[in-house]
Length: 424
Image (cartoon, rainbow, N blue to C red):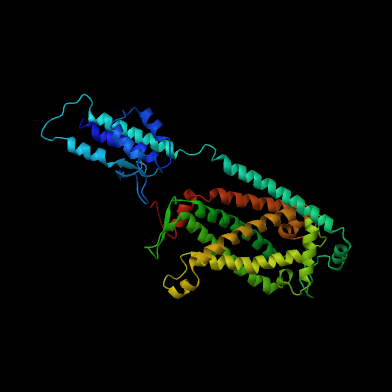
């Protein structure tokens, strides 16, 4: 019948697609209840050879439209329909003569739609084992890290049994050489800077990770001085924290050199290199260095703090500025010399370094005399009591509260003080 011919052409689309690599189309069409019409055309289409760069001989590409499901692809799936069936349908239809049919066209077309939709669902259904794969990889990675750590400890302990290594440890016990007149202890401003730096870094890493992962921002922020610019609310929060971190860092460096505290973290002798190696070997063997952090750091601590303050932090700043709106848009030559892709390649690894530094730093503080170490930075005294621990616990509560509060419901009113917040 002339009315059924277009439906037959649509039902032939699914088998035609099946020739390109899927066997799910016949079952999907059978379940939808569509009669096998125009089988001769279908057989000729499915048995035809694929010419290079095209579909089966005698077919036409399906016209695709909007998706039928949320986050779905264009519908129907990419494929081909027999061109002969389409031309026969046009030729057999007679507009001057009404066609009487017991089978209305709309149910047939709807059945064809259901068939193609079932085929699309069958060919694009997600693998049920997909969610388990990331968990399995993470579990294997965790087991691998534990085994690697155990191997490092065993190798370090074996090295310390060698005569040459024992002589090296005796010559370089791990202490960093300090110049005369180096300050002893930690002033109150340093303790405050230390807390505020940790506070900002935790929120910076959190907001930066949100910016990296989000597909569509929950809200947008437009500055008052530049109405044509619009960024996501999380990006605004991340960049605002960056500015505070930069101001805090500049104040830290200025006070560091004004009070002489720079001598604690800036190497002044090449002896710091063998002492850093000695301290690393002692840490790896779980036989901690015995220096007093209230007086001086060991070689590994001094080298790491120097790299963090004077290498990693500037790299984070110069890469972050290049990726932000602070970068001058008209500086074409400078942008060509320092492309944004280079800044992105620097910024993320630097973030990973800071995360690793904080994790290892906190772990060693707690493992090498928690009460005394926390008293040095949070209690301002070289004693073993609970004062520093209590202040440290309070600082963690403040950081946790800020972590929970850092959401659009709280950030939007604050961002509104400096610009306009909108949903799109």
